[in-house]
Length: 460
Image (tube, rainbow, N blue to C red; front, side, top):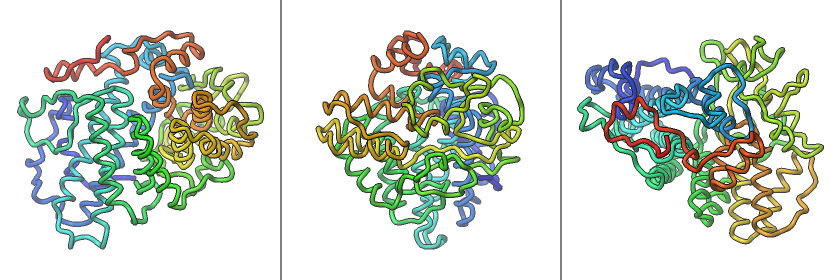
């Protein structure tokens, strides 16, 4: 999506609240451009939300870095490429000055700032300015996006500052915000998603925009982390009744010629050219890529071996050229201007999230039934292993790995299962023996230097 408006969301984001860099201080305050003249028309509200979606696209977010932290930091991928910052992420030799750690943190807070401005501005508008239901839908979308941003922050950085208001001052007493706990961040996410579900329920949304199913799934994933299994079951049952379904051909999920399908609940969309996705060019071999260079996020032998014989997903996930492995879930490099979208949430995750909760509550037969839906689509036989809870839990974790291989979910899945599971996975795939403090990234040094109330993560 292209933001064609100079919108209030750009004037002062939560980027400033955590004092995220000297360039940010050159941006005018909200009042300096006439805040009273914005959010007076429905078209301006629409523009604000489009601007919020735009913040997902840069290479400092879903355009690259999200997949570095989601897969390279886990056992799915090596850093590849030629960037020493990415090597440090891969090797767990991170320092708080790492440029990628810094820009990812800052970009997410930029995105949060846009959603905060959209939520505040649209909430204060007269309902008569909108077609029926449209004001609620826009608020629901913005709340979903803010929840998604905080979900990503807490997965990778742990407890972070919670910022939900538009900032209108550079007074250090206002912008020097302290960190909140992981539990508090999850509470914030839950509150936003519950509101989002209320606002979006019953609204027809075009693909690429948040819908009620996406909000329900993200909330179910949070509740799974928090151990609220009954709530996971309630949410996933609701989503399963909304008409989503697995596509019959797994590979078609990544056929970007298909504008819509029944499985994708939410994706980051790119139009190509001036609003292109750089990630496919960074990972693909030629001829799918336009340029031949050392590619990034290269699959580990462990990820290649994770697929069972006959698994149809393997050829859709990994390309092998002259003995070298490449990520293959994007198909068109187009000289860093790809129109390939990036899937964030899909229906297979609803089934596997529900299956995990069912199993942990002792309903193993029902859990395996959902697992087998995923395996059948992949061309595999039904699960026939032991039916005890720990064994099925491991089977579900392994199934999630191959199902969502290279889609950025692996780190969150490992972290949810605890330090020892994460440590063993990295030891097996990369011969790296991590310490528990490394379950979270360092808070960027630049933020610590500018905000006396922002404490570092221990160990860094």
